[in-house]
Length: 202
Image (cartoon, rainbow, N blue to C red):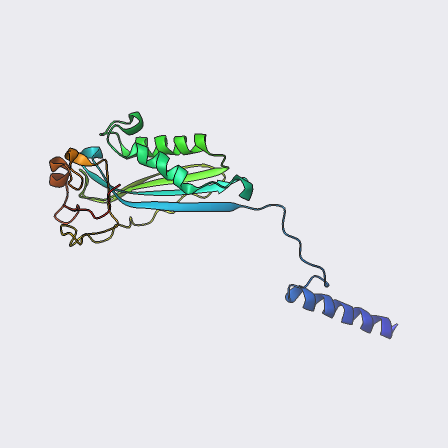
């Protein structure tokens, strides 16, 4: 009897050790059937003639049904950029950011086979009529929304030089000139909000 008790105790200790070490008794651990796979990308420092001149960040996060449904995110980028110029995809230039973000989210949802999507637009304060940064987020399906953080717009000092901020983009090319902003957009901006020259313009 005592021997059986000792054997039982040793067996329990062995099982506990295997569990603590993540062991499975020598068997390979099976990959779970349920899997959530997300992808995200960002388009930052996008200057537009919307709302009399605004500087945007476009943040996109989505969830695939499976890896086999993955697609080149540049396809989604092309859809977003069609909305950026005032009047783009039929959205008026003075439309609220909420209207713009909802329209873009609907376009992405209609185009791609997704189980979840969270799309966020951040607008830099002083580049529009509002002095503080603000944002609009649209979330649909099975995915966590973008966390509401302080909008991330880098410092703009020196952007009025040829060296400028090489990450900036301007949509559309305004005033018919390759690297100039519309006068009304430049006037709306703070002193260092917009470049007079952009080394990379879409």
